[in-house]
Image 1 (cartoon, rainbow, N blue to C red):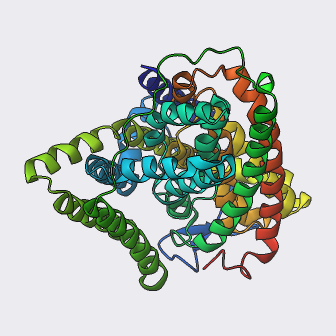
Image 2 (cartoon, rainbow, N blue to C red):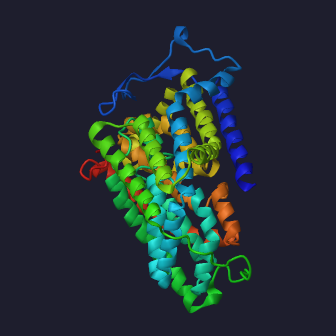
Image 3 (cartoon, helix red, strand yellow):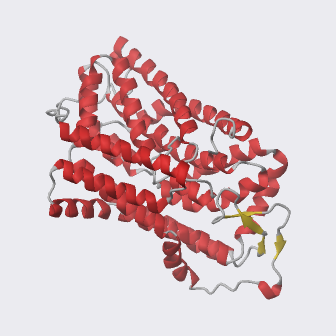
Length: 468
């Protein structure tokens, strides 16, 4: 119920922004930059600094009051590649889960890591972060919260630690994702840079952020072990509903499925780097992974079909949000005001330097994430403005993508508008206030490191392979 309620609110919010965008076309002067193809991606265009000029009366766009209704289907048409990607990936993930491979990996790893607090915390952080880094896992983690709470209670820790090893990892994995088709792939597509490019440096950044997260969680866990009353949830009763389930066994078939998945993801990364593979090839790779996984799991054609369709159907909300969000850009572009907005913002940031501009982008993305918790939807709302703004302020496109990722990812672990966060907290019987008290200091550390990485990427992005 929580998820459905907020999904509707997200769509209403984005629809309201579409209406607002159209209203702005009546009050903001129309103007335009000259645009040229990106050197790295000729199919995308980039603005030329210093070429902004108001549109003459003869060239003024005339937006009819009902244009927003036309903009929505046009936005869906423009975002069709991403929409199809969302449906296909959702269906394939459902097949992988039906095979039991993903759940077996997660539960087996949790059981093995349960011998000591350090191993449990560190191992779970890496495992859950990699799931978000590669295929944008998040919803799959929610059912694991009661299992982890039971393990942490058995080890004399508390539910905060259980929530943290999942959701801190989830936030960091999204913030540094290298191949996540729901986040970085969309943002890089809009920014006109090769998709999955710079995944190696993002992996290094993720390791640094995970170290910060590990130290924060481990310090809290040690404090709980010394003094149980220091727990932020010491007043909560956990007498029922937190029994450890039977382990889902690791079978040779499930191991083979995980190997196929890993090889598929790595194969696409290589193909994108060497042969220019793009979203169409990514869809093909995921379809191949799903088909092979179904065969290895012994699923019948009918079972595979139904599982795939159900998984794709669960992505309908995300797909609709992407289409509606793309309509915002359609209205701003067809109304002739998007370049005016970009030029106005650039004028305030250009003299401040690229470092300040990149930090400002991070702030904007962070604020947007509180209102648009959908990563893919947020990318379509903000990146059409942030990408040309980056060009005008001397910020590399990959840095603009990083600002989007950091702003979207880190606050994913605590924003109250996220159905995943609130649902997981409910399963773990964790009051939201207690969770904020735990995560707020950590977020300050993560954002400080994020700003440092943004500045580093501006000056040394080419050196560390961020643009390769």
